[in-house]
Length: 335
Image (cartoon, rainbow, N blue to C red; front, top):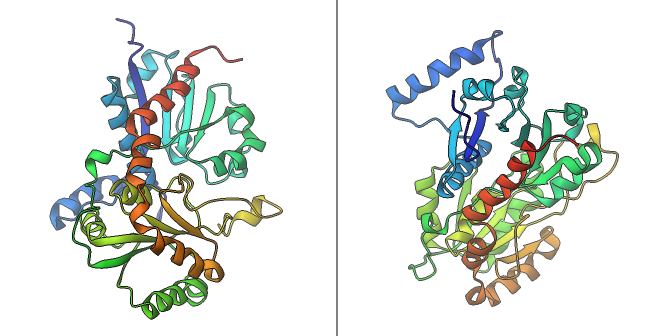
């Protein structure tokens, strides 16, 4: 049998699965989902980690790598070749092969859910998508924590700067927890202040739109008002920036996940726009400093160039190279 090529990348991904009604019904859903999609014409929704995985595959193939997907037989026949395990913890439940592994992105929201994960000598790196996450994982996993991002291809996102614009703000609402509280204390007051200035607004709620609709809305918008408590990477706002739509982002500064108190005694620093720069737009921490941020945003609208930031900092080529640094590192003997 010929040795596996050094150019071959073995990746494994599994979407989030959980038994809902009876033990084992997750496996039945694997069969039912494609049938339902075929009968209804509706596409099965891909998770954020699923999208990041597909973006990684594309980036690696652009760089000329031979990417093999979910081929456990190939990994079994080449036990010293690295594997990349990507997605959700269910993937790890049955993973018994001895190959050195790069874990992530995905898997766990907090390292306290699996504090001894990196004690396994097979696990060489644990990848996260932003600096604030690296700071959260490092006390548990030490120098095995690495930073990787999904690459955004500006060629796939039309530069809309010169399009006819009839929307002042596309509001991207990704607030999913404590909805009543945030509607009362943040979302509704923001919308009222925009209306008081005579600004036209269209709102998209996370999970209630398709990519075609998002692209169309971006083409009409002068700016994106991005409302998310925090982001591991934030692909949606980066796609807006790739479209040359500047971003006015609610960036409260902390991880607001309700499970935080289960693992952390105090606040955890976080960001809703972990990849951002002065030419991308503006940030505000809450309703108290929104008006000042809006003034800055409106006054600088013609001077932003977020598409250039994405092209320079978040390209698929840089994404592939970053991943391969960890993947090649996994091939070396464990320290």
